Image 1 (cartoon, rainbow, N blue to C red):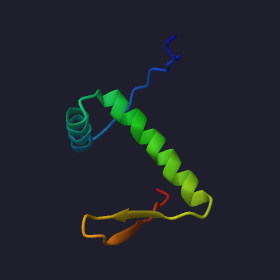
Image 2: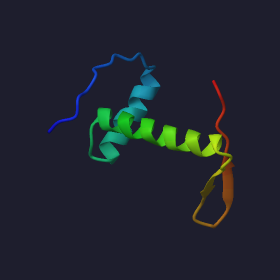
Image 3: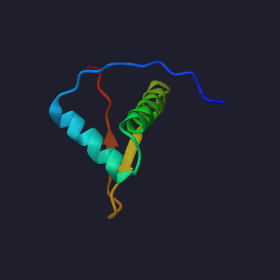
Length: 72
């Protein structure tokens, strides 16, 4: 059974649309799915920070950097 959905309209600058299209192409998916995944990722990251956690990214050389989320 399909999940209920709400149709939204968003305004994005052309550069953001280009990035969205690129991600969809690289993942062989739709722009809607890229947005859906992005929302889920943002929620997870924000929940982690809100609980006192840190977000770390490690490059292939093993160097770690902390990602800091800022309120906009």
